[in-house]
Amino acid sequence: MRLPTWIAQHLAALRAVLVFTVLLGLVYPLALVAVGQLPGLNHKADGSLITSGGTTIGSSLIGQSFTDADGNPIGRYFQSRPSAAGDGYDPTSTAASNLGPESVVDTLATDPEESSESLLTQVCGRSRSVGELNGVDGSRPFCTDDGVGAVLAVFRAGGLTGPVTRVVSVNQVAPATPFVSSYQGMPVELAQPGEDYVAAGGVITPIRGDAPAEPAVPADAVTASGSGLDPQISPAYAELQVNRVARERGADPTAVRKLVREHTGGRALGFMGEPGVNVLELNIALDKQYPAR
Picture 1 (tube, helix red, strand yellow):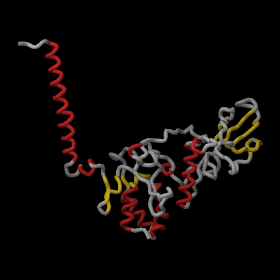
Picture 2: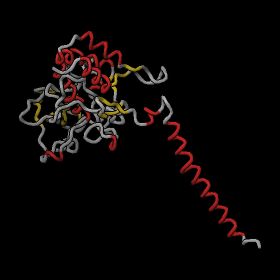
Picture 3: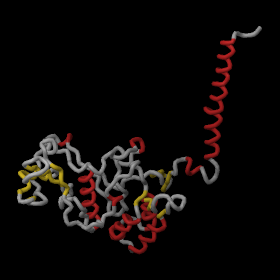
Picture 4: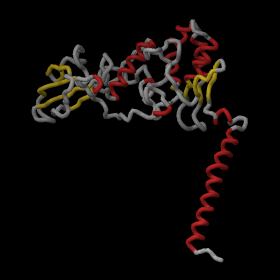
């Protein structure tokens, strides 16, 4: 007895679902797991985990911070680049800051919880801190000496044109000192929390200042990666830290540079990206060869 057409079609669809469920839901994943356990592949398939003394301390694919309980950099370790993933290098919150080149004005609220730093101020503050940590000039163009964005809100009698009537340093509040005392003959004021100088008609004017065009602190030391998990830093940022790490460990800077070279990887496939230094692997090598004093 032939089944009705609609029943036959439903049975055929059910058989197809069962077949593809077995193939794609069981056979295919198990086959990939088996391939991933082949010699030479198993380490990468298991997450490229790094162990020391029988304890897993991280992955060569995910960066981490080398700071103390208060969040301060530990001097004897090479420091990673900033991270915007969660509280820093959180694999469950991988993300960038979503701030772009036009983010130059801080949000200064009366409630500190509602305040936020612009990308420019974040870069300026990081550059200043990295410079102080490593004993180099941390100044950058468009940054104040106290580590915020050097940005003015300029008010003019005619809106966008006309004589200047008022000037505010929008990222500086009391008790700071304005990074310039006057602009086009008008005294510069400090910002007041809660004031929106853009909405009030101020023209946002970044001031370059006299910082060198090529800062001593490289870009990857002050900007987070797109994923927030980048395990590498540039050779330039590693070189900046060599003398400090060598001093803290009582080691020869030349020997520390040799370790840096040994943990520097080339471009992907020989032409993509830039060379990078794996910070975790480098710091592990340092602990083995030059234990902390």
